[in-house]
Image 1: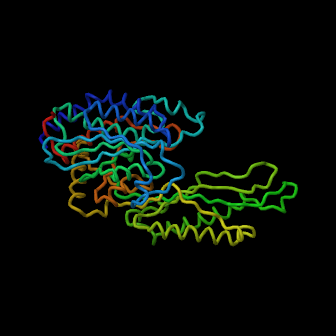
Image 2: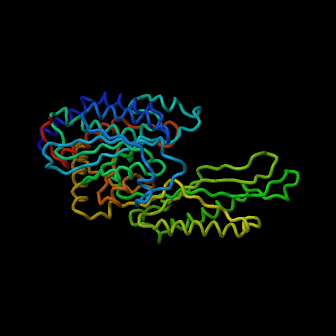
Image 3: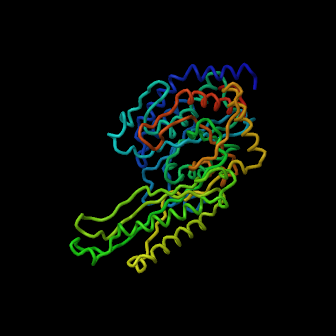
Length: 432
């Protein structure tokens, strides 16, 4: 890339960075938890349209995607699930196409009195912006938009198709990204600026969500021995799942990218409900579980082992051996993905372009690699669309926790690196 245009692009990001911070604050102020993303998506659609992109907003239809690889089962409908894509169409189409993907949905804030400031009233303190979703991952979504803005400010645009995707459902299924593939949005590479400290993600885990439903036998607490406590029956089942977790993390089970990691796979009891009355032996309980799996670990085999572990634990309970727990799969049904295993020329070229962009922004410092113990939407592109998916985003802290925050200096650098990556990967042409 010509040194002059590189310098101009970096300066353009700097020149518009205050606007980028304001944009991020406005987007973070939308409480876009699952089912409540519509206002944030309307904001994104309007902003993309104002920039001259061809905007496509649509309601996800489960019937369109339920038979596709990578689909995660859902409970309820998607009447409120909206995706937004802004498409840049070049005049010349001489470069390589690109998907800039990000999710607008955020996880619940939890008890508001445990935040230092309201989670959906973003505030800046020094180099940090605080707010639910500021880091995960609205800062990355905004960086995608302002990277393109920087190019246009220099009088150029990508010389290939670029699709700016603002998707829902990333935090619970990934079906939003899958719906984009079903809609026909394909490209030569994908870039997803998830908040992993300006490192390139080489591998990510898969995730399985499931519920365990238990039925007990109600009784007045004065005669508790005549009943069967469904809540207490869950305790040995949870212990058995944690024993399985230990086995799956054993050295011989690990994927190569996680060989150094003693406990990459985490089982989490994320939600527990049960009983109806303090003086009644509880007749029911439901607990929700999240379990990680390694790249290459077969989901169906993993589910079979989960089910057998629960059945075996139930056999050791006098009541449950004749009242088998019911397992319901909903939410994440995600395979792991390793960019490190993509040996294609396109993957090498895309990684090389990102390496160069990162080094140009960071004074020649090399782009570090990272295997993460979470999942992202990268799997859809890498596993099901033959598209190398690069996960590279800003530094954030306390994501999914209280006082979530994103490093604004890091957001600036990621925006600059993204703009340089687009210019290299897609090529440039004069803005119309």
